[in-house]
Image (cartoon, rainbow over all chains, first blue to last red; front, side, top):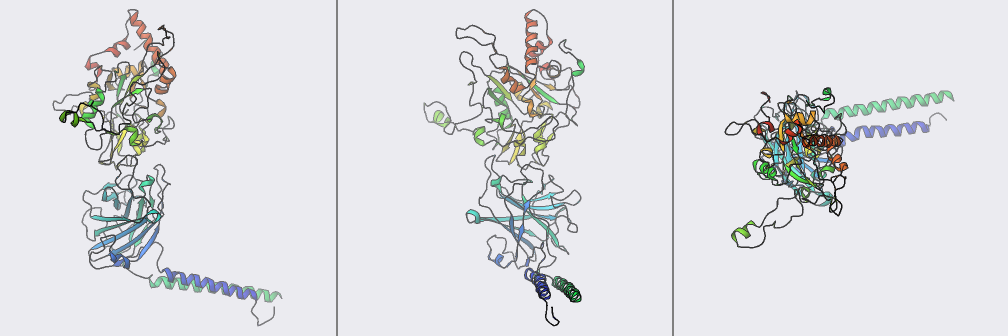
Length: 280
Length: 355
């Protein structure tokens, strides 16, 4: 190999380095948000209480992956809903959370012993400074759950571990739901509304300084899903303030990482080329 | 103590851990006439509210027969072994297997002058004891008997274990199994888990309900403060039920179950250790077409063993031996217990102050 002409190895290394830089830098700029963040919008008024309100079109959304909950109930692994579409918005007075998921069968009004209802739930830590165990919280670290069932409506629940779920006598949260479409595209849409200020012991403070942890669960009634047989998410969070793009420090970090990768690749390529030159 | 008892040390009362005393019932199937008085006594006392129309906490079914709910003996539930470490999967019966609450043509007959017979309007295709008196076998050796059933308030209740919320529990003072209506969220795992299908789901209240062994009666919660046995026992015309505590060593339950071993649990293979016991049914031996008696069991032993387990031979033999003793002019404590008509002996509910 003669002096002054780039070797094939060098060309390959440069191409790979360029690819690494692109994937390192371009991807975070495209999604611009950490994987477990659920963005929300600041909105005016209370026009989002309806599941079909036009205002929801302008609210950012997330597709949250769901899996079978770790549970000891029979058939716990047999769940059907894999994704829930989440949107959240906050006005001066209220938090709105809108959940949408596909369910080909509308299971409402369990009027026989073998039928179960479709249902959905949002889970928050009671004490927002610490993240509780994902499965219904823990004894010292309880969770506040907003639960909506197609049959019995809305409940506000408190839980300190599996099997401990207890309903608040007077729920601070309300929910509205619609079901539209047919077949595989048929969709439930449920909107929860709660005042940011809601008094009561063991009730999540929504006006928190930091991020607010949140998790989701969906039950498909026609699959006899109830109790611990449910599709659940991991912990996600609402960021401490609304933002439409990822934080600047994040892009900066990714850029630094990209440059570091390029540098390492370049040094390695230089070393390899030099070693080969030395051998000739 | 009976002379039939081979070894006193065999007698051991298995009361569930953490339970002070175990309430229990013995039903003598030889006395049941299938009148359903117990069924109605229970029905009118406890299950008149909306959503419980189909429920019979006490029912009487004809055996052999499909039972209530239809096919309950094959619906799963219970435990896989006597170690009670793993439950047997079960299923929730279909509404049609219980039967729906029928509407009758009362108004036509009583107010509109119809001379039609009283009958359900429509949809009467199955119900509790639908196969009444059908039984099995061929003439002249057909056979059947009646089997009254309540919740067995088991020593190892699989319904309690099945509930992920601990909404079902076994009372410490007397072992009665109850559903906490505040905790129940209608998941129905208890309905699946009970192999006797004696927990029911109320589609109106969205909660499970079951036989409570008439605990307000045995606690003396009535207007006069008196203690009463469960309504199904007190109202029974032939008085076939004895009620008391399994661990009351002076009581008839203990003697029949533990000493003489003639009162047997129903389907012991479900491994829940029921605390309702049965004196197995006797029937005349088979006849030839000419009416001659032949020495063959009318009710096949094998069938009784399916229902009451391996103790059936010993139980039937013991009772037969005591019957013969009486026929020869002798005495038998066992026969006295089975024929006693003194309510104070039939129902011993105040023997434990803390019970």
